[in-house]
Image 1 (spheres, rainbow, N blue to C red):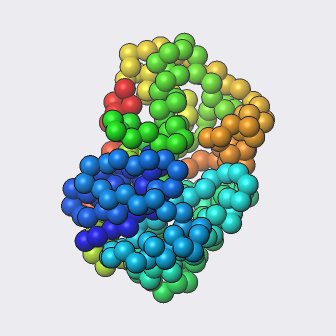
Image 2 (image 1 turned 135 degrees about the vertical axis):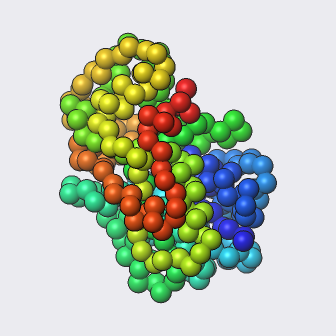
Image 3 (image 1 turned 45 degrees about the vertical axis):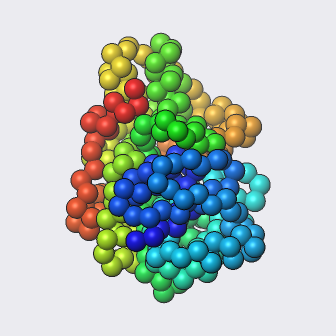
Length: 283
């Protein structure tokens, strides 16, 4: 099968391309970050522009794996709409990486963008599968550096180098981190069969508070660290000037992201590892 992958230069995108290239032919779209992955055909294209959409559409491919998104900043809503416009215009089956943010109670432009994308796929009549990962993590790739540093790598760096680790709020909100290889394998499993045209939550085998996540990383490093709980409002203000963070998402960070993986496991056969099992990849 020949796959077209959007957002291939992101952390999740590059890992998926590496995983997929072992079993499929991969055409990887990138926009700003150079892409040099073995057995992957890179194409520089910006799907916001009709000329590039036409160029990509002329390529032969069997399905689209849509991983590209703009989380924050001016024009994020319009960018994500244009990306989905392009993906739907190719008239191919789609596997779409959404986010568990769709379940959050607090409104944000990013949450609404993800919900709208999912609804557009549902209304398109195309075969599709939507996977909503909770906190993807995994190792750094030797030959690729994404434009935005992956948050678990930043967290591991704090644990490695400091006796205190800054944590937003009380740290009691829960996440269910999913290893990027498990997430990639789940997406690939859908491509081996008829797409079910439904959405699935995707998380690791255990839900942990942020305090427990810090403790799990520290234990794997044989380190003793202390979480430094800082006001959420402080991080919201910092996120307004920090390129890797969205203030709207920070404002909702204390909502739990806990998933039920049973439907995903029944449909794919992929049993996601726990964070305590996968954490050593961050060392």
